[in-house]
Amino acid sequence: MAEGPVADLLREQTYQVGLPLDKRRTNADESAYTVTTFNSAFSDSSRTVDGRLDLTYKDRRPYDIPAGSPTETPDDVDLDARFTDPAGNQYRLEIKQVFQPPIPPWNTGGGVVTGSWLHGVTGTGTPLMPTQFAYGACWGVGNVIVNGEVVNRRQVIHFMTTQMIRKAGNYALAIDEELPLSPDEAYLGNLHHTHVLVPPIKVTQRGPEPEPVHTAFELPTGRPQPFLHVMWDEETIEGATVAVSPDFPDAATTTQAAETTTATTTQAGTTQAVAPDADFVLGGRVGGWRGISPDSIDGETNPTLNLQPGTEYTLVWKNLDGAPHNFAIVGEQGSTLLSTEVISEQGATQTVEFTAESAMAEYLCEVHPISMRGDIAFPSG
Image (cartoon, rainbow, N blue to C red; front, side):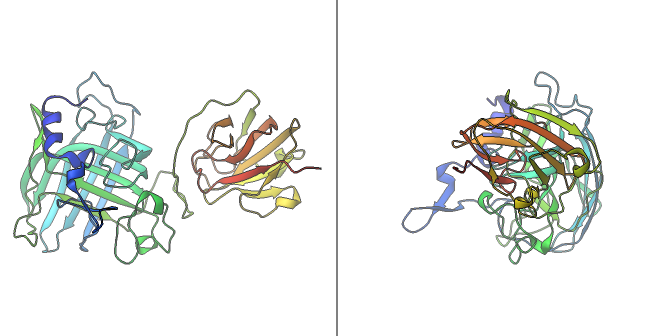
């Protein structure tokens, strides 16, 4: 539970962690919520500006230290971020220190995270943005420089490089049910982009306190915009696994492998060479499982696996795209019956031995459970 200046800040800026009912408008018959009652940094309204970005995330510790100082972290970033506003004013951002809780009041993985989930239902970041996969993200404090002058010091600055969440045509913000966006649905056809949000919050010796960003951009109301939310929609990512398929992860789950499972991971090498006697051979890729053998499933995406209860099976799958995958079987109600470790090396294989049970309903990758999901059937006769 937030206390002190953090609690005071959240009472004033509730949208950081939620959206109370009195902050929501409804349609005419009050059957659905529509928009917020206040202006926010997460609307569909946008303008195109110019900018450049060179950002390196240094994720050296994957957890926060709850009892420690917000600055006691080995995580760090290298940053060169420059952009204009629609009026042509020049902006530059400097991150002076990466922070961990209680600034901000959610998990940050030491101030820098990689390969994680943000926003939406995750509890990390505002829920006014959809749940999204982040290749990297950081939270820090630093300077906002406008036209060569430092206008804010020790302002909160949040960068994240995520799957594309803006839609083609109108740059509308996607919702959870619409993700992942295909190249035809995504803005500019790109599958990822980098955001920076500089909210109206500064960090003082007392803790975080409200402080507008002193931008040089005037809103239609005649007031200066009190925050910055800028996207680089044409960046490239280096030094990280990037899915080339339009399908991105939709959930991540860690489970205990069932006793009936024996899984062996083999690095590189061909699937055929390590699976001459396998009952099933699959290829794992973000866009779906690809059937390889037997011939009845060859070339199919997420083919049905026909099993007989009580029979022992050997299944081998090969990582085709270098994205993180594992193999799991679930029951009718979604309960996990077996689960293997995640492997992310392209070309690596994993052998799974299990005994078929009538309770088995589907197989899936727990990192990409929407796109990589197939049925298990028990045909009679």
